[in-house]
Amino acid sequence: MSEKLSVNAGARHAVERLIAEADALEVAVRRDEATGVTIVDAGIEVRGSTAAGLLIAEICMGGLGHAGLHAAGAETGWPTWIEVRSSQPVTACLASQYAGWSLAASKEETGGKKFFSLGSGPARALAAKEALFTELGYRDRADRGVLVMEVDRFPPPVILNKLLHDCGLAPEGLTVVLTPTTSLAGTAQIVGRVLETALHKAHTLGFDLHRIVEGVASAPLPAPSPDGGVAMGRTNDAILYGGRVHLTVRGEDEAAQALARNLPSTNSPDHGRSFAEIFKDAGYDFYKIDGGLFAPAEVWVSNLDSGRTWHAGRLDVALLRGLWLEEA
Image (cartoon, rainbow, N blue to C red; front, side, top):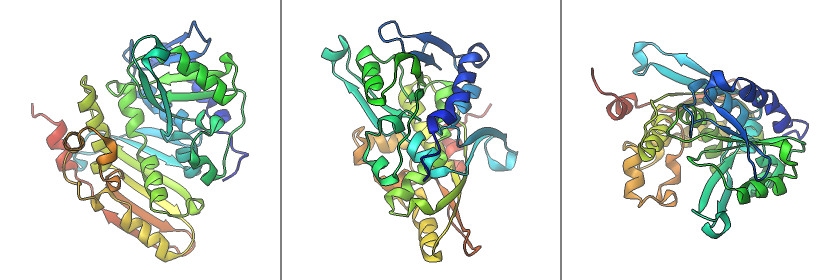
C-alpha cells in the first residue's frame, strides 16, 4: 500500500462538489458555532438524496473508488442496484471507508445526552487510532480532512474538538458529513459499502490484503424506512443477501480458492433470516452475532497470476422481496 496515495486529498474534489451543489443534492451545509468545523447534513433536518449518498460513498473511499446506480432488468428481482469499483480496494475500503473509529462522549461531556458514532472516511487515516492502520502500514498526511458519521443527531463540540486534535487539523480544515440510516443518502452510502464488507471479511479470514488488486461489487438499493431499526435491517440485508463481489488477487491458487469458498455470508449458520430478526435474537448486541454473517452473499475471485476464477455463495433476492416488497 503506497503512502503516496492521500485519501483525504483524493476525496477533496468530491467534498467540494457536495458543498457547492448542496441545494441540488438536498443537503445542508453549516459551520458549527462552537468549533468552526464544517457540517454537512445529508438527512437529519433535510431530505438528502440518493445522489448525495453515492457521492458520499465515493468520499468515504478517498477518491479511490466509484459508486453508481444500475437500473436492473426484471430478471434480477429488484429494480435499482448500487455498483462500486476500485483499483485500490484495500486503501479505499479499509484505510478509508471502513467505519472503525469509535467516537463516544458521556452525558456529562455533552451537557445532555450521551453520544456515540463510528467514524468512517478519510480522516480516520489522519488520526490512525485503530490497530488496523499498523497492519496496513498506512497513514495519511493532509491539511484538510473529511469524516462521515452514520447518526441522526449533530455531534457535540466535545466530539468535534476530539476530531480536530486527533487529526491535527485546524477548524477550517475539517468537514463532517452526517448520514442517518433512515435517509436516502444514508441508505445509499451504507449499501455502497458492499465491497468494503468483502475486504473486511477477507481481513478477518487472514488473507494477505496486499494481494488484493481490484474489486467490483453490487447490491440492491432498498427504500429507506423512517424506523431506524428497520432501516438498519434493510441495509444489512441488501449486502448479506444481495451483495455480489468480484475480487482480483495475486498469489497462490489455493489461497484464492479458499478466499472464494470462505468469504460469502452463506457460510454463517445465521444466514437465511433477516438481519433485524438476528439482531433482536442477539439482544441487540452486534458482538453476539456470528462474525461470518457480515459478508456479501456471492463472491467471485480471479487470480491474476494464473488466470483462474472461483465462485461461491448465492444471492437470495426472493428473501429480500419478501422483506421489502408489497404488491400493488
